[in-house]
Amino acid sequence: MLHRSQRSVCMFNVKRALISVSDKSGLVDFSRGLHKLGIEIISTGGTLKAIKDAGIPARYVEDVTGLPEMLDGRVKTLHPKIHGGILAIRDKKEHTEQLKKHGIGAIDLVVVNLYPFIKTIENEHTLEEAIENIDIGGPSLIRAAAKNYAGVAVIVNPNRYNDILNELQRNKGKMSRETSMMLAAEAFRYSSEYDSFIYNYLRKKFDYKTEEFPEILNLTYIKAQDLRYGENPHQSAAFYREFEPDAVSIPKAKQLHGKTLSFNNILDMDAVLEMVEEFRESAVVISKHTNPCGVARADSLNEAYKKALATDPIAAFGCVIAVNRILDAETARSMSTHFIEAILAPAYEDTALEILKQKKNIRLLEIPQMGETAHSKLDIRSIRGGLLIQTYMPQELEKSQLKVVTKKAPTEKQIEAMLFAWKVVTHVKSNAIVFANENETISIGAGQMSRVDSVKIAHMKANKETNGCVMASDAFFPFRDGIDAAAKAGVAAIIQPGGSIRDQEVIDAANEHGMAMVFTGVRCFKH
Image (cartoon, rainbow, N blue to C red; front, side, top):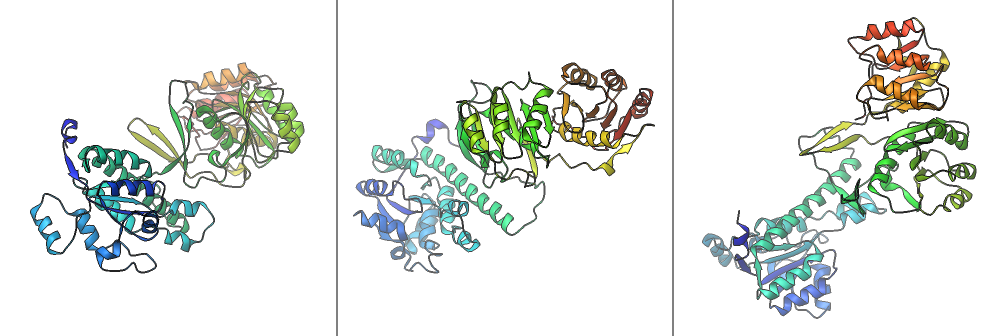
């Protein structure tokens, strides 16, 4: 590879340009600039018309190839007199002799952007319309020019036009190797992104079953917005969305009020959305720093909100809340007395919006299909130098999966409370402990290095009566100390995965304290 000092002295002449663009932004001014530099322009279809209508001389591609456009425009530039002129290595004698023998003129600049496939499928369309907007000739031109960057420049981004014209003017019609290398890399990125969108679209349309974890992973995301900063003010950040996000997702949410979303807002809202999606009954989830600090279900949202808030009203200061029913005025009034960063709901009553909008900065988001769609299939996390990918964790736990391991069996009411607590604990950072009854969390112990400390913290933070509650643990108890601590809190029944080498010691402890305990056989760590 050339050293930086060498690149600037490597130049090649640009005498002939091929222009064929779907996005015609800046096309006329750029073409006029090329013409003033004495660069010959050849072009196709609508691009040619726009250039000639502006009074700029240009040649038809068919005058070069000797063949007209055919098959409804599917074949225009796919011809040796085009690709030969692009791919010939300029300082290779055999190539230049072949160009001369076949009457092929060199093409030194290729300006191409592709059919609007992405724009087509983002709007209402038929499969046939999508297929017709799969560009064939364009990617071939781009790849050919980028491959031969030593003697050909390729432009895929109209935002480059002014810079390229300025360079050509400064260098009297010559292009630097450094610039052509940069343009080539950009071109390959552009064409690979285009192909990735097509693949993902057709995979879904044709229901093509790919490997769950392929050998090569291609991920394509679109920038939704730049963010003011990341988790902290000294970190820069941006928000990217999937091309076709799930209907129930933050990228699909409509913001009705409040400040622009921050990096932390988006993380918190994604976490609280996943939690509330676990429930089909009217439910409210209050979250802080991606951990739930209160969850409840009830006949009314207002009742559920009050129960959820009562779990930990101090931690809920500056929280994010998700509800899975239309947010009514009564609940909005209750919420308006508390400092809340953001609220997610499937819809809002007009009066509720009026009440909440009195708070200038509160972010109000609407996600209409909450509770109607499945979770995303894969969970993707970055590490330094790579990615970790796994299937989505939460799964509905059935009563039949519970294995009673103690002398005392849980009551039906306790089982209902256990299943509720289990839904919550799957969303709490490990080591995770949840105290609950059948409809509300009582206290939550999260993110501790030892499980017994999570139990003690849950007991310490409790604002409600813990005597007779159930306790959920995201993983097994390695020692009996966690059971002893739960007994001191008055826990009556425990749900946990089981699987420890000391399970019997733990079961014996539960029996000593007269507790009921069930094993799920499923661990639900959340790191």
